[in-house]
Image 1 (cartoon, rainbow, N blue to C red):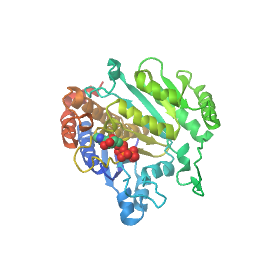
Image 2 (cartoon, rainbow, N blue to C red):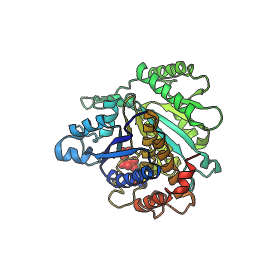
Image 3 (tube, protein in one colour):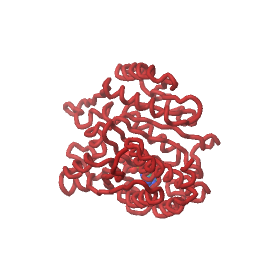
Image 4 (cartoon, rainbow, N blue to C red):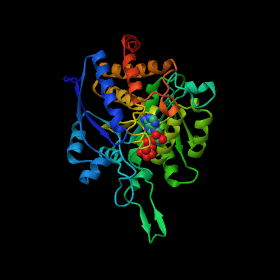
Length: 371
Ligand code: ATP
């Protein structure tokens, strides 16, 4: 148990709708902490992203990096803008740099249907969707970022890397997460790969099978990436935890977000052994930025994951309760089915959703978290 129960949070709003979803998220976090009590959050805001790159030539300034390293957790909005690029044409993505710099190998992307949000899939079982995609976030195809080669305008090459060290920690993390989820029935981890074609994925699968032996209470199976795309649309309610390579996880997590209403509902956490970044799965959404239309739910749910991670790491039960409270308030805000966000054709923008969630952060929601 830590004696000082105030956590320092490095707050990096970033670009685009990152600026719009972060302030309401801090409001929701403050309200949840005030309701639960027993611990504090100290927010320190720092600059990172495409706009600061445009102004200074550095997307992740040293003070931001140092503060992020010192902080207990990093809360990130969204970063990158299509019209601001590095000289090689790639986009500014400090969120990727943070993953590499801090070794955040486990990209946790829960895909859970929020009660009351109109289901995208017509089957009534769509309301039971509750799975987690774990995207390896420090190697795979992304290890080629900044290192790809183009020869004579004739041929281009990027290399995918799988290492034993990272894969073992990734799989152990995935099995432990499945054990802790209590989804009902025997927990299951599905390894998503392309082991029928690539040596790198045969190696990935071999390590998965080795690590599965250490978790006899968890079922371990494999599905190829192409079949996973099909099955995630046909029967997503059947999955529990899926673990996969970086690029596959990047793509599948957008598919997952689509299953539950859109990017505005999909939270994420990038977790390493010492540090963690919490941010919505969505990007800066330039098409809707500046219009008050961004759905802040994914940001709220990412913040809930943050306080739950802090709770587990430091043994502060109240922080876990604050996370549960935020999730309960989100569920209650949408439960009646009359809060229809813009990406689903409704009128509710950032302010309306925030007000509804703040109003639902009441004694009833608090009582629900006591169980
Ligand atoms: P990236 O390339 O970083 O993934 P992007 O800007 O290409 O980012 P997203 O920002 O993820 O893509 O957005 C994809 C789509 O989802 C866009 O049409 C955007 O308007 C919508 N969207 C994203 N986030 C939200 C949100 N919070 N609320 C409503 N719509 C969103």
